[in-house]
Amino acid sequence: MVRESLGEETAADLAKMFKALSDPVRLRLLSLIASHEGGEACVCDLTGPFDVSQPTISHHLKVLREAGLVGSERRGTWVYYWVLPAALARLSALLQAPADNTAGSAR
Amino acid sequence: MVRESLGEETAADLAKMFKALSDPVRLRLLSLIASHEGGEACVCDLTGPFDVSQPTISHHLKVLREAGLVGSERRGTWVYYWVLPAALARLSALLQAPADNTAGSAR
DNA sequence: TCCTTGTTTCGACGTCTGTCGATACAGCGA
DNA sequence: TCGCTGTATCGACAGACGTCGAAACAAGGA
Image (cartoon, rainbow over the protein chains, first blue to last red):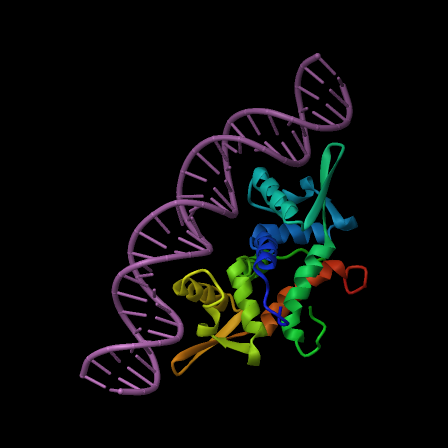
């Protein structure tokens, strides 16, 4: 990010991912999934801790999934979600660069 | 993030910062500022590369500033903006954790 | 002092987003 | 087969967001 300015396409792509992270409920969902035993969580584990309705949780999970931040799979009755670390790592690296700009590893 | 689930307040706070990053124009602005010579840029350096009007750029800069991601100062005629690395580092660390959860820093 | 240039604020507009209740779909067990 | 539980989709609504042009404010020079 420090190295050279983001292209329009790249910026638009990244903005979608950040947008998925820009809601407190989604951030907590992601955290719950990531911190859940086994690295994945069933939707039924995720609806309890929130004050919003189940359809709303389902909507937020869809946003996270379409942003490429989590994966999901139905196993029998339940649907499981897990974090996709590579996507988060990409965002993390982007934000890390400015603090690191003397270290020169960017691009 | 992996370590334990985000509290409601923390999540709300972080969500504001991510929201500031969730627009392509703001992402490119941040990138332009970070990559600008001296680590800071005048507004007049930032309006050219975009297709949006100058008041819109000013609006986006305000969003970045209120999110705590950039600082600004008027020096004579011009207003300069610079990135606040600590804020980006905080977000970066948060997103880095999931990819690192086998590395042993987690609980 | 007045004018010019750089920047922010204001008011308005259309679109996007988060939320809900109702409903549909999927799989399991009786 | 039917009914039950878990999850997703639909349609609607209020509020937030990105954008603009017009106008206000700030600083410097003639």
